[in-house]
Length: 270
Image (cartoon, rainbow, N blue to C red; front, side):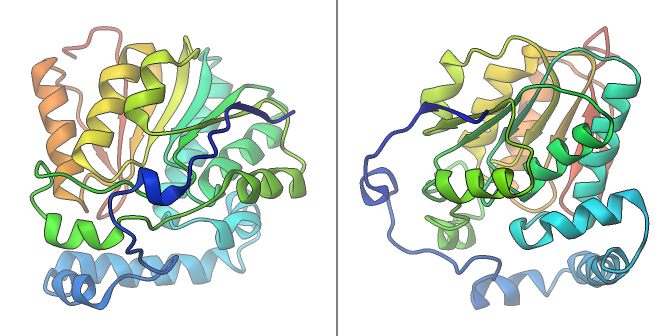
């Protein structure tokens, strides 16, 4: 059963500081020209296209799940594989805790997590935190504000759209929607233990808020996946500052140009 913990009805225009929005799944031309100057991004984009082609025809378990969610996600195949493998590891090694995604957009990556759990015969709660009205505006802490601000109001997936996806895939049991800004909702969340935390908040303040409120709830052996570390400078800054302030020396595992993954150790400094 899908539950709506906070179904605010305030119009998006009142909650987002800019009416501009990028078209779903399409980058503004200005940002494309900016990214195209980075050969690592170009190479990663080519690899992403190849991976999409392979997963469109591959008979592997991951590829079969990917084909069910590909139209509902902007995550790369590499990052989706990261979530898939982390979910399987957590279940197979009996690591306790719920699954949490901060920033779910159209719901595809969250649906992949839930499909993976169903595949393993595992029933766990999945919490989805999002404005469900699009990305809030970045701040001065995001040094690439000129390009980040082009996405204000984009990546919109409404509660009804995401709910429909989960119902269509018959994975709606145990899914909790929490609507609102991370800064407002995460400090009062009911989640106590987290086995897998997926942070897809894009901006400095959003990612910082996720880590400050949820990192300590991730159990030892649990996973944290960052969607934007290599892509948005504000996200990278928030992650580096948090890990540095806590003296966390665990290496970030590279998934692709943008995504990173961290396994929480028993001792934070190791």
